[in-house]
Image (cartoon, rainbow, N blue to C red; front, side, top):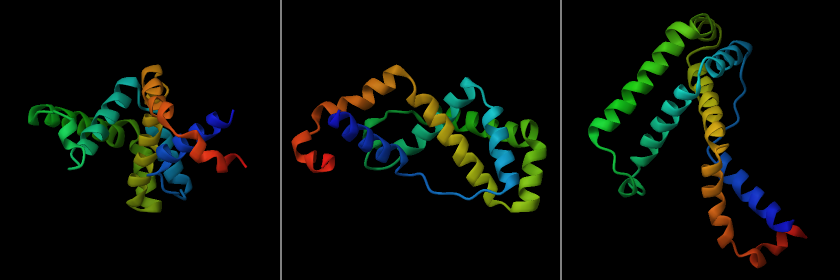
Length: 149
């Protein structure tokens, strides 16, 4: 039971490390809801692929990923098309209202919520869950005993 607590705590920290608290207004909320409800599984996959591509460009991990320039352009184009469709078709009214009443920052915040939703969707995959749990087999539980006291 204690081991599960440690694992849950570590995973929660790792998954939320980049999440920042945002305080949305009503129009930003509506835009975020529209973005989430307007995306399907293929859209979510495109978003996760793009996020993966972006992170893989970091010098500390870039050697681990072998994406060609052509593959990167395809991923960028898919993301650009998704972004354009969501803001100019699926969520046009919500986009206009959010920007008009709450400013440009609403787009960053609303897409951050969409990104978090996409990540949660991928985290639910059994293969991803197994992979995430692999490191937990290597945790030195004895060194973390103080957490259970």
